[in-house]
Length: 193
Image (cartoon, rainbow, N blue to C red):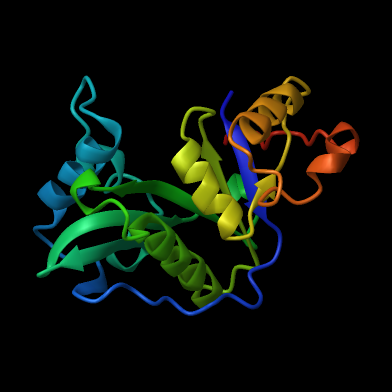
């Protein structure tokens, strides 16, 4: 099962401050190939191929304002989506499909587009955020911890997985309450999530 990370309050978010030459925008008709390219560059090709129409557009949560991009010369190079999955609760936004084209590595674009998603949640009236990720996505985990997310255990065995991630990557300062990992509660995973 994937790891779950939550940000229990969306109060006090810093402003989005993109590097020079980059702009934030949302999805527009015709952006499907850009979304697919960013995710394929970020995650690698999938089989079957990752398609916007079957991955995102068919979901009832999909609307253009929820699919955000960081663009260079109006071409999307990073993306994250401000999704809504009712099983997590009406107050909770779900951070969905975060990816950055590696050609733009080192610009913190994953951080900025994820922060923009958190701002979108606030605009929609959500008060907390959640996401799911994999153990090996350490650069993404670093971003989420920097954004104020914290581990949220849904299985007892995840306690040891978090120990390994934090210790192997020297993330002690970024992972609040790590010294109390043995007392972290295990939460029920929402049905249907």
